[in-house]
Image (tube, rainbow, N blue to C red; front, side, top):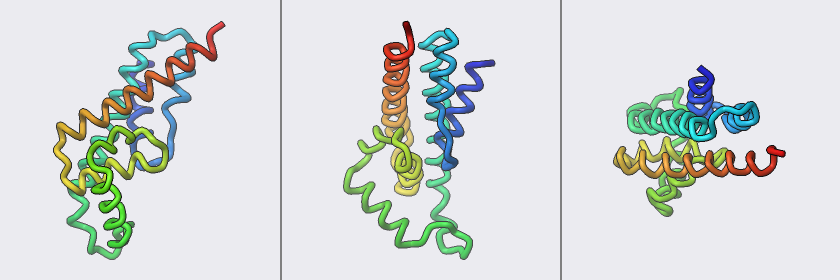
Length: 142
């Protein structure tokens, strides 16, 4: 159940809502939970949240001309231009605060192949959580 809470925390953190799964990850690590299971749970949850962003991006184009649409055409075009400049490999940075979640949304808008998206995003997020666990093991263990 603890690991499932970390999956959920990672999922929410990857959404467009402001949240942090790293705090829960470190707290659970300090309590002695198995590091590789913590890594797996956080990586799976965070990657699944990014997959939802990708799916929303895939469908969002249908609504961009509605009055309630939260992004202006100029903002959407700017995001697409930046993504095209740096390419799909920029998805390795989907773990970054502020820019990571919109990056996964734009990948859906631009129809990045899902398998490529999944591999790059999971790799970046997995590496990030590995670093968090490593740093916690060095800084928080006696």
